[in-house]
Figure (tube, rainbow, N blue to C red):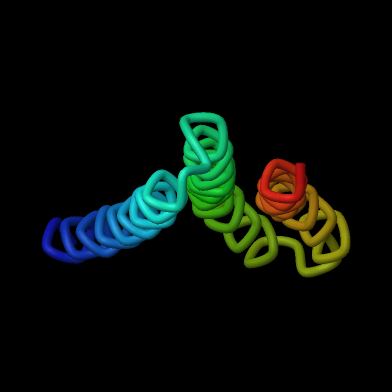
Amino acid sequence: MKALKAAALAIVALAVLVTATATVASAAEAEAAGAGFGEMGKLLGAGMAIGFAGLGAGVGMGTASAAAIGAMAEKPEVFGRTLIYIVFIEAIAIYGLVISFMLIMM
């Protein structure tokens, strides 16, 4: 079980690293094009917005999904209520994506 948790943590860390690297690379291109620190800050902020929102939603989704599966194992009629909670958690990641698009389009 510990190996599975370590592998999952490594995958999440790799995803965050790839997102951060892509954001920094885009910011470096903007700086080379003469856009200045303002454009670089926007791109970095957009990457951080979606990264942290995705990270928070992922942690919340894992916790809520485990609890929802346990509840549905005991009482199958609570499926609808647990599905609503999971949808609310996924909305956090969608809000982060929308905010990052808004930052990029400014």
